[in-house]
Image 1 (tube, helix red, strand yellow):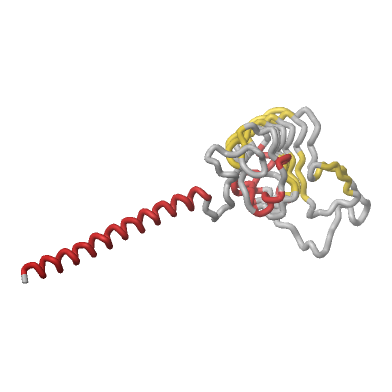
Image 2 (spheres, helix red, strand yellow):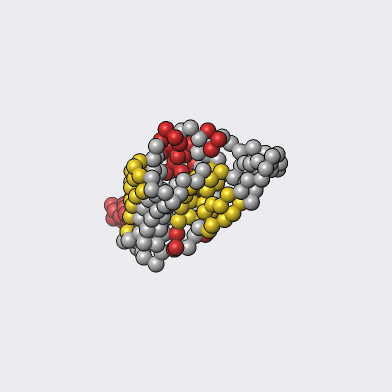
Length: 232
């Protein structure tokens, strides 16, 4: 579905998204490719995929794309976008979108290309994007995103060009360090360096308290021995 490079305005019509049933269904058997117009004619289309213009001479039925770029859509990205679970390419760049990137996009496991560049999106990049293990192209540049760039899985492969012109973003792969002196946001399930230091402090405090208690008990025993000798 390609609605790019028009002058559409207003919020996304959610009711139309809810009618895209084919984009919500799981894909069929990939070992037996089927093409649109496979029996009577050969259909082709030119799309923007992974930042490049690409012509599909034959269109696979499992190659599901949604391009709404280069319009004037406003408002927030609808949370129900996560229901389009079969999407391979999602492009909403060059619009006037605001608000957060929905964390539920991390459930769109088939995504290989995601482009939200040139909007007015804010807040932090959700960690859940690390769940997109097939993601080969990511462009979140030229927004108002902030905080540390998340890490993990495919997110480790993207360069700073995926995040540039977000003045409040920090951490790897950007050269801008975060205020807490950490280079990045650690992947899910891993402790940050600060957390490790925090644990070590408590371990050392506990060790110190244990040593104090041991020394006190030893001195007490020695004192009792001296007192017993004196009384004899």
